[in-house]
Image (cartoon, rainbow, N blue to C red):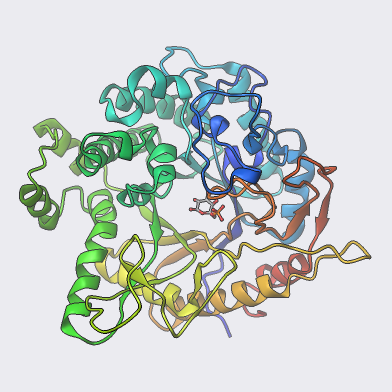
Length: 475
Ligand code: BGP
């Protein structure tokens, strides 16, 4: 039996640049996602900051949601979605990012998209910045390193919040803002902020400055949104990857606490409106000089979020001592957890970690949570009859939803909804591939550029439809 609230927001999630395509139509400017390579280049997606003929840019076409959104939304409606999470491509609204006047055709596209969702009573859940920004802001201003970008972002947010205030109630500011803490993974910094931290003289200090600018921008937008319409719900969005201690050795326990500071720092500021003491201590020890003004501190205080949106895919494990062992930590300081299995991409599958994370977050913050990403990336095989038997995806989602329901019904976590990632197949963010699929809806499009873009239902489609219809009672 389930006791999920009646208005629980079941749905699905994507991001503009991973589905829309139409990268240069209707006045859209070039975004940083448009210069990310894909396909054969694997994870090395940042090859150039300008479009070059010899590379493939999967986001240019993506799955052409821009032209197919009506038919795709009809399928979401068939799934019974109560909400649909996507993002607005900033460069459709402000092609360069620093203009005074928005691109009306871009605004109209999202009006039409939101109207189509509302036609089926599907609530749009909108991320303002999901791994893309106008490339002009990177080339001319240095991306989020530059304090002026705060004003450009707030202006963009002001325009869309005003415009869509009666159509969109649920908003988030920056997708997975805390990913940047892994500043030595170039893709995270680049897509979040237009900065490749490793190219900076002091990568970590620059990362904190960039993040500070974004936290200030986020707080300004939260306050602005509430001033525009008091009942808008504006959240942050965190990549939640719990870091377990490898053992009960006190050093493993403490290492996990320290490692989690890196993750909580972002949500601490978003939710509480001030930096935690451990952040100041870290900056002091490392000799960092982050430009934080008294005005900034007041802004942070005045713009705390209404809820925490989160992605959850995996847990990781940290270990303090390796004496006489062959195992060593990876580049992030994590080691394989012998008690869980991993996906083909090495992501550790840990449904209990979701319940654990929801508990820890709710204990810490006592504000509503919203799972806005969870899912299983896999290579799907088409059967001779055209079907896709993605039982592995059903198994993954079923186990995670079961733990999510325990968090609500047994632990009392206030959870707003659940939107699995990539409800329709889309371009992988991490690898730029089509073959890493997450959807209930298959899209016939492949890494060699072939494919008809035809949509078809996978086995998981009917399964999730029943989950939604039963409000989680039938898994
Ligand atoms: C999150 C991002 C998404 C998405 C997802 C899956 O980090 O917010 O944009 O793509 O991960 O990752 P991937 O596409 O690399 O499998």
